[in-house]
Length: 403
Image (cartoon, rainbow, N blue to C red):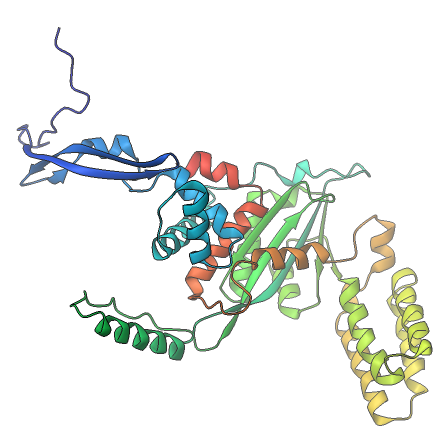
């Protein structure tokens, strides 16, 4: 009995005639076990164009790099100083021959795919707000958001780089293909990206989101993230922020929280500024004043601390010192609804936004530091991979979506 071919010749869907055999053509696929080279048959039809049925079996994405290589490249890149360094590490340790530019395109494409999957909710955490149970037998989720500065390549820098590339191509002595059309650069050397963070009491459940958009985009991102973990189902939804008005406005606009608190250490930083102006850096009296006022904020509350601050301001005669005290009073007055430390401590709630601050650093680790400049979309894609890892979704993505 004659065996049926694994890849039978395709036929025209309208006429039923078999596609024309166009011969065998080479195919190369880079895998974690090395580069696979083989021949596969190409078929052609005037109405339906060309096709190579074996490609779908070799790689569903019909790409020349396997999912295993893509994951390894993205993982190595996360802690690399540059794409050149990451490519060198892959070549030396895994014998994967990827150039710097190919690696960059691969990583950024994967980051964009991750970002799209998170936005479309095809990639979501495996936990929900009801899983975040505390020692007090309540369900509690903390929420944070902050802006982070990311270095971008300006239009002037892009033009300078392009001029250098053109000069180098002229010196090579032979004709080169035309350069692709230049993309416009950024107006400023830095842009504020937004990081959103949802987590439980012991951070066993975490969900990170990033956007290069403005405060409204950050609000939509936080709303989408809350929907994906069913945040309204949590009995306690606690926000901890640095006091920036735009963050508070977005949380309140989307009605995401049951309580919003000012990070205790940001308040202390502002009190420190006033202390240095009034007492000087090395004054023991200043240190005693700082401890007393922060103890009042933490254990007695806003109103007692306000009375203490206004009385202290009244003892100052220097215009500079009074201005520093007035600035501190203005800062706390604007944030009065968020200064609720005695209540938070009584409810066993945290009072610091340290987890969000720390997440901002890890999410931007790859895109920051000296000499790094990015297109906004590419920086967002690389940060999306960091968010994927910190959200505990790395394995889920590479086993269910990227393969």
